[in-house]
Image (cartoon, rainbow over all chains, first blue to last red; front, top):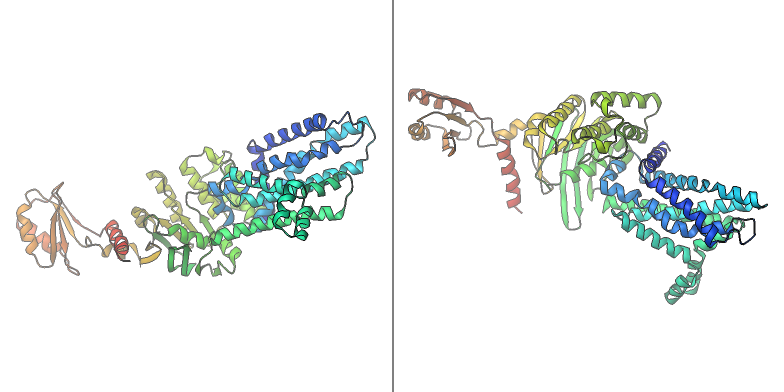
Length: 244
Length: 310
């Protein structure tokens, strides 16, 4: 446990000494606000809720989260520090968890910094704060799933750009599973039950339910399982590298 | 103690390390010597647990790297090739991270930190990001990282590579100071290092063990071992007489400075006969030297022979 914590501390600290943390948080906050007010018609809708705010999160994460996760392992490999890290008496799982939780905590922090919009909506009207809390929780879980995909993809390459593109591509597919873009392609070669399974993997569907305030345990479990799956895949990739 | 047992590593069809067995005892500094690409780093990476062996295994202080990887890594301090570190961190943060990741807690961590900072004289750079340090300091930070948990076994991959002569000397002094009751495995392709550091030498090429001996033993394999070389004006006449001396295998003259070297036949001593002959001839010697043997020549001999053979 202390090993996970040590890795997490180091990662978090490195975010803040490099421009990464500042660029990420500023861009996220500006875009989140701009999208909510302009594309989401926050005022014009005349409703006291944060639907237009949360609706854009899947798309914001689509290119911001890969930017956060791409350096995770690719950079260690490029700088040679991977050898240092993996010869410490810690397991690949501990290292992976440390890195993942550091990034996730950072996203949680940035998400918390969007609190002015919550103040705004409470000032303007009388929203259901339970629904808003559910929205935040769903958004954080979804960010975790994106990040886990990124953790896994970053182990595959020493190039950050490749890691970014792979992560964004996989997340895009997972996001749109269930939409015609993915379903039409999938139904071409997969049997019907599997097509349905693909549809059920959609990030968008699971998030939409939570964001509407329907805090279904199954949606939450879906995101948690996604996180576990992708992190496990990443650990397997790391251990395979030792042997290959 | 560090042991390898038929350690083998293949990359596809290429065999980087081929059935290597060696054993380093506490108090020994073993120099792992070989030309570039001989498999030195691959051997170290397998012992450190960074790479898994294709077959065979290694043990660090009795812990098998395959069956007890964490215990083995706990007993080992390791400086990877090029001394990688997180450049954006300060020296203090970096060493603190390593200590925490190695599970050192509370008082123990502070003591370990203080002692390593003192031993490697890092006080003045503690607050500097590692990226801003000179190469010599960065190597010292790498060494500090490797010994912060006071490991019984230490493995250093080319610890002096790329340093200037003064820095090399510093690093060697440090290793020497650590050697007393530790098991140390050092890889190098610098022969000067062998004399300065190692109590034993293992030469590998193409992943195979070619020689395992003390530096002095290796020197005896050199044809220069026991040879006598001297410079004397007008020694040309003496050359033929030297060649006729019993026990002399060959006499060579350096074309550049005219220095004459007399090579003995195996098992023969030529110092005395040469000296007697020269004084009989009344030659004025400007210098005379008994050669110990040349490691670079032995190294070349051993490693090129293996290349010629399949």
